[in-house]
Image (tube, rainbow, N blue to C red):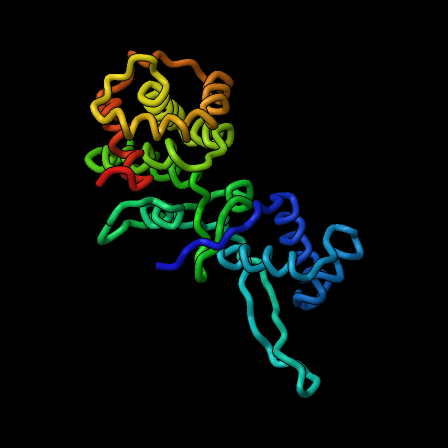
Length: 266
């Protein structure tokens, strides 16, 4: 399976500017080639570096916001022109288990499920490309996958919560963004409950955990992210960690899932 390349987040405003530029060129009867798009953006002092534009255009094509056609140039010995056109569709990203694996999920899933989502430019700006597919960020993947699972596929929700717990306890996460997106999609409570389970397991002064050795190794990692996690929760909603739903993992399970994610447990 392909892996994600390390990339910085894009600017959603710049993504919008590029889309508008393609439309403006078409309205003027000018072919929206790579060079004409770059010239238009440079003239408006929006973007002038061709490699940056290339990455943005590749992302827009992968998310099915733009199509690209290769057309023969009039001059001989000149490589084909790359002509872009808007599709009129919202950004399309891959989420689900396939995305989680590409974000580092340390689980053997023989037939990982994909979830195709329609989203916005904020999510697209954080997306990553692998092959010809744009994959949602870890935060958007968790939120977008929890939404249908909690509504239509309750029998699979517990498995996905296990994966989400393992990654949220161990990976670098933008908790403010995660909870903002969760609120927009109606799964804020579920996400907060997972985070509270993680905090209860890894920060409690008297943890009810059997694998103490793994716990202390996980605590060293979690201590660096706990402050941001708790601040993010407080900014959105306060929940009592003693009133969690039955579907949420126990402290033993949090240590088990997070330990497996880091290779500390089998």
